[in-house]
Length: 175
Image 1 (cartoon, rainbow, N blue to C red):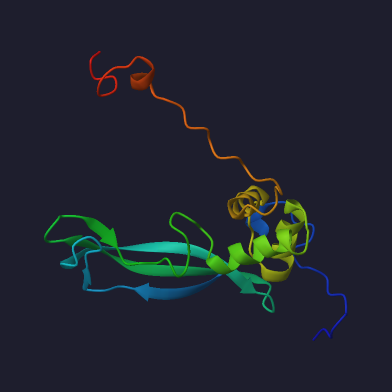
Image 2: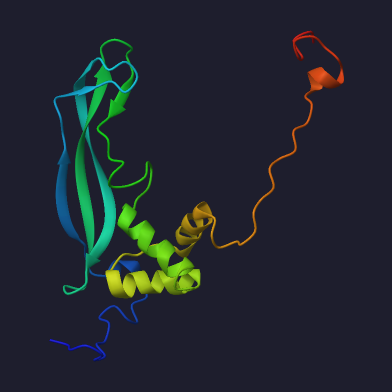
């Protein structure tokens, strides 16, 4: 067992191929419901299917392995409006994102508060938390927060549309 301040070699140091990295620990979670309320109408919505979403989370450092969350969720269809939706996973991750909120917050903190460059933050996340995030993804997260650039973008100048310039009534419908 390594004590504080003692240098411990990284088992993955020097690996060139991604396939050589240690396999991830899998933690299974459920968001599987028989019925939910429609977000638009509040009417009953029955389950019509299920899905699985894989999210990468901060890993198990002692085991030197990453952690993947396999979340099984239910898909529902509203009986009143016919809208299809799935069980809410917003507390775990953003829509269409492969990483949990914890990973995103840690990466943004490393760049903004600690002042690390994107590539160094990527290495830090792998070395200390065993999550492999592309540095471009970290850059997108930081730019989404808006702290790194230091300059504010001016609001776009409102311009008259073609209907106002040509004095057409009702826009361009007359064409």
